[in-house]
Amino acid sequence: SSFGVSISQPVSISELRAANYLAGAIGKYIGSTPSLRSDLDVRADLDLDFISLGGPESNLKTADCQSNAGNLLAAFDQSKNQFVNPFSGQALATFDPGFDYAMILKVRPTQFPNRVWLVCAGLGEWGTSGSAWFLAHKWSQIRKVAGDRAFAVIVRVRPGQDESAEIVRTVVGEKH
Image 1 (cartoon, one colour):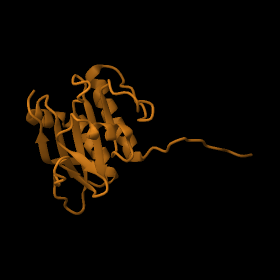
Image 2 (cartoon, rainbow, N blue to C red):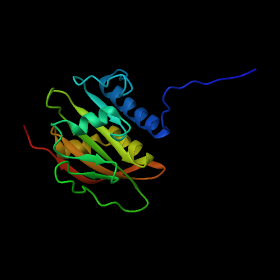
Image 3 (spheres, helix red, strand yellow):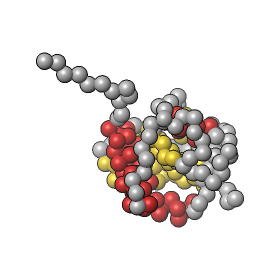
Image 4 (spheres, one colour):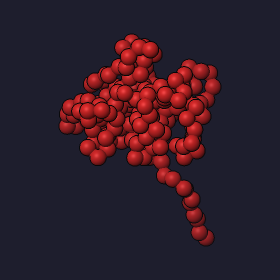
């Protein structure tokens, strides 16, 4: 007998960890389970709140978020393996060996300023899941500094330990 498995797009274990952290925290906060959808399912949609996982070369909504005119703070330059100022190209952080890094970016899109787009994008698989863990469990640290403004937070994570995520740099947008 034969056995076959079909999958249109593989999902990395780091993205599953990240989605689990965020779905649990959001579900607890809003009292219902959030909708988990692929970037392909919502690629044409802009009028929605979302958290995207992964860099702009692997997630269409991350690409939308960082290319939107509402993003004045940070971009993930995958060709340089660096998080940069979108205008100057200057690096936002210095990386120490032995850590994965990630950017948590909040943008209010110019087309729908009442919406919130969030990105958890990592350099290294533990960067993505560690940043999602940080967003899910340490949101108050970000809110204390950023309030309801746009922000870019760079975190570092020890590989294998999402709970080790810690902020190394925060850039906050102007008050509206």
